[in-house]
Length: 632
Image 1 (cartoon, rainbow, N blue to C red):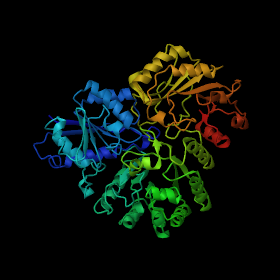
Image 2: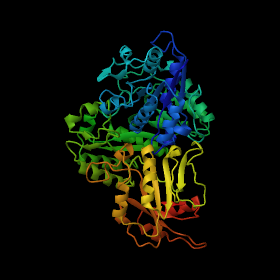
Image 3: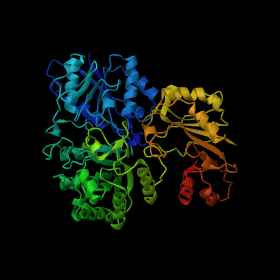
Image 4: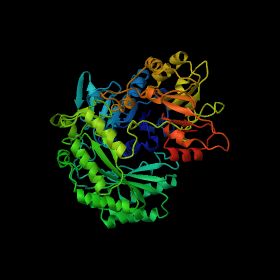
């Protein structure tokens, strides 16, 4: 009888399109090819390894995922754990284990670190894989095929697990010497890509830098060696992705232009992508972007380049162990802009030894050097990083759970960080009050009430999942079919009658974001609405933790349900009275041959305007003219 293994990678909540389970693909391809499960050479049980399909994993709510995993009845459930999915993944695993008590849950990925205590002691996790996972996972499967007793795992390097109350961390596993031993999961057809989507193609696992806030390349050594995938394989994966209908390639590589085979790779890509059908995304070291290098990137079809920056403060750069030649960096970045390559430039707030003056100097440097737009990010004190080990030395206070946002430093209070974030986002042309990482509301959420109840945001989603419902009394919700983002539209709502059914759906699907559109002629007072919302169950999670900078004190606020009050254009209400509780959406019926009052929409306040019957093209034009969100 085969050892049944199921691999799961939950998506980034606001961008499931990039949830290619590449790590799961590597684990499957290596384990199936490894002789006798790598370093477990005893008689082996046949392996059956499956990856939960993206049509389900990218869109399903928790209840549906729990049901699907239980139905598969795996012996081993493997989880790829990242900041955005680790809490949800382990909560789902814990629910599954109540029905499958003999299930072994194995977690891997950057979240699994000896200093991440909440995770390695989580009741949903049986075994953690620390560091590079292919060899460790293959060896672990070989051992689990013989015995399920955790006491017999101590000779397998790279594991963390509990035996009773004792936490066991085995010897570290050194990085693989030669990545060519990992077969391509793309070329083996273990992974699926969506037509028009993106492929993640890893180039190497190496970084010569040791920035203290980053995990990339940690313990991989100063030299590249054979820790890269060959040119022929990379090109074959690009061609495979193109044949699957992908329109974008994201090269998973910290410093693409530093690799010794950069020029032959660019020359080959220029031929493969001569028609520019593929939009290429690369992370680059800007100090080494000569005119020749940038021309090669352009000819290959690189259209988006991430170049970092983070800070120009010399003290912060030194504290982060980050060496940046700012003059050369600016020269290289400008060359990208001259070739009309979109540049992603980051400013990080809360770095060690940085202060408000240093942050302002960083922004002034960007403007003075003519480097275009920048984005603002808050420092995440990630498990396993040098920065976390040094946190006390710099007075770093941070969230103990994902996303591990910085709350204060020895040079900046929470209030200072919050004010800087707001100011810099305004100056960068970004919405300062938006919650980074939250899914955007769907502008088609408000449809005519006679339209079908089930509407999927993409044809890729499992058609059985429900993403949108117009609710009429008596209220009901199909708990097991709910997606991870659901629009509930309720005309003339009866809030007390909604409480029980919505509460049950939220308990079964605690990670689902419910966008609740309440259609009122006259909405309830803010205090009444707040009191009702407070009666609903609340299970704080990742989406809630993202809200920490919304208030004057460092505390998370509930993300779901997200309330929207849809009111007539003529309603006499003040949107500011509902700030922080509900967004006001004005309903405006555009008369035929009459232009809409764009100026009035612009100054009305609130979250936007719903124009029943408007086409997407009209909505685009009106939104561009007013800067106001238009629902259709």
